[in-house]
Image 1 (cartoon, rainbow, N blue to C red):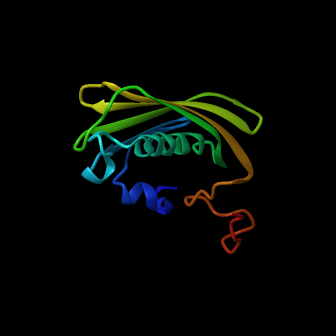
Image 2 (cartoon, rainbow, N blue to C red):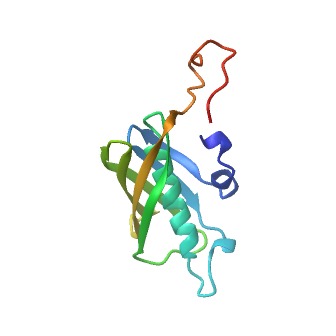
Length: 143
């Protein structure tokens, strides 16, 4: 997923950890990411949290997208701050799920934002590049 995620790559997001139902992403705030008050633009905080949410909810092999999302901005962050977003699955039911993401400043651990996302899995599987596609090597993945 990261190989095709040009937004995460262009913004310098790094995957710090992945496990079933969990993901940790890091990003350093650049001067271009702050608003006229000199603090992080909320859109970039949301984007980091949303990206961690996306990686966490796609760890089960199904193509999964956001169905809802909400963010609470807790404290300001500034250019040069390294932020870490930790996404944790709270529950999955049917094709839906609920995930919480905490965005913290590294290394002091101050909470910058809290995010909750609702996911919905589509009826297709993520192609496991290590496995042979169904129907043999010549089969095209459904996307």
